[in-house]
Figure (cartoon, rainbow, N blue to C red):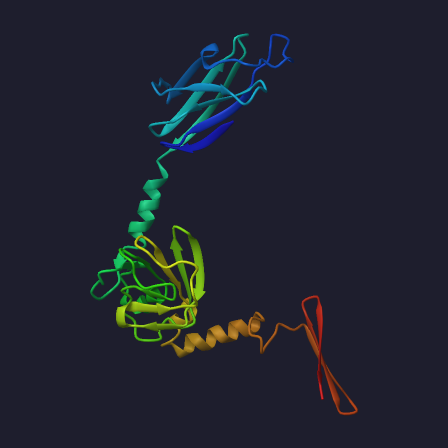
Length: 271
């Protein structure tokens, strides 16, 4: 079996050790009781390999920390000359692609001058025509305390009310919390939200989740109408549910509307 790991990540693999009868567990063995071999791409590695017992079970863990990418092979020989072997495909450390995402996506500074208490980035783009779409999904990292438990200050520069009713997520040391934006003001890029369980501090992340479809079609009537029609056809518009059948009955001034939506029958009564 080949396992996957990253450079700098501790690799641990369990294996059982039995006495010469192949049934009785060998309990209480020490690291020095095993012969160990560690290879990387068919070359002997100098990385430290250790073996330790899991409780007093006769099951052991071989572990090492790879220091380079490649195919690693580990082999352990027990005191009765049983051999256990496995291999690990080791890739670059996660920080490589995490940093790449951060630099390749959140790489465009928000416009305007930075306040002393905040700094922010937004989705990178080279297309000015879709700038507003990216402005509707912003991320800021506070560099100092900005605001309080009901107000968060960033360097967002959109006009007053641009982010109203959207969702703001604050990620801090105490945890993550989401709040509906009650009011947004361009001054200080200030977001007013229902009271948070903790006040924002330096290092906290502020994320505003935008309604991208709404922003994208704000200046495109044709697109807006097409999206509305698609919502109706898919039954996503509450005024136009996706109905397989719809019938209407009128008796003694009472109207019953029968609608079959999927496997549900909905009856609405009108008087």
